[in-house]
Length: 238
Image 1 (cartoon, rainbow, N blue to C red):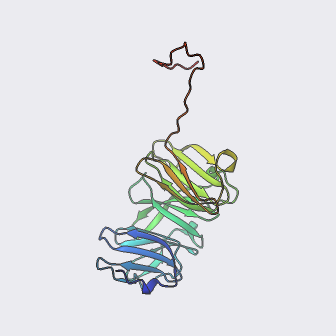
Image 2 (image 1 turned 120 degrees about the horizontal axis):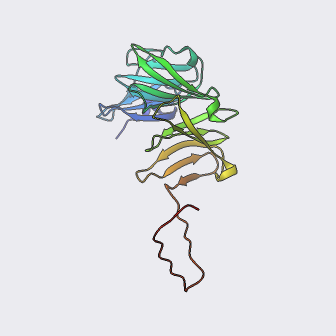
Image 3 (image 1 turned 90 degrees about the horizontal axis):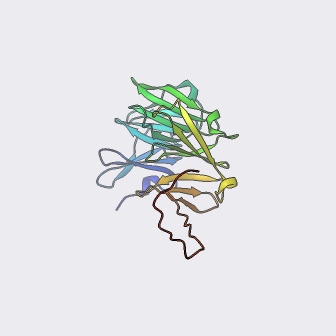
């Protein structure tokens, strides 16, 4: 049984599992907690930032997104990540980038999407996606890579964007697809994105329930004339 007493009263924002099988828990108001293999819960760092929106583990350090920017936290310290462009920005989500080793996507509220890379003790900016989001507010609530290496971005109040890249290069976006209430979504307030093992995409909304987007949908075409056989041997484009 896990002792939840240390995190009692704090809103949990994220759970992640470390390679050592420990669980890191980020909260609003209580900072980051660690649950060890014996299910003991304790503060990850007594000097850590108290309000944390998102975390990701990277080689014995925790990349930490807050309302005041991006930080690198260990069990001994918590320092700015060293990227001036992200100073004082509200970081909403961090995920690994599949393009370059030791690189990550960092989502912000109102300032677009950043691709960063580990360098030395800090991080450097590789690329920023802004106008390509085709968004007025750019309030990113979640980002997710699907199995085809397409990047899904939820823009709270504006639906979803799906980005396709050329040769896995974050600087070469070949297509931006906007999905919102105008073309099928029951609501534009998307909060979370997930893909299951069958490839179906799932979207959790605020106020509109859970949305599933199957990998593919089937349409059945039948001939109304019973004398014509319906054995299709080939399909051509006219």
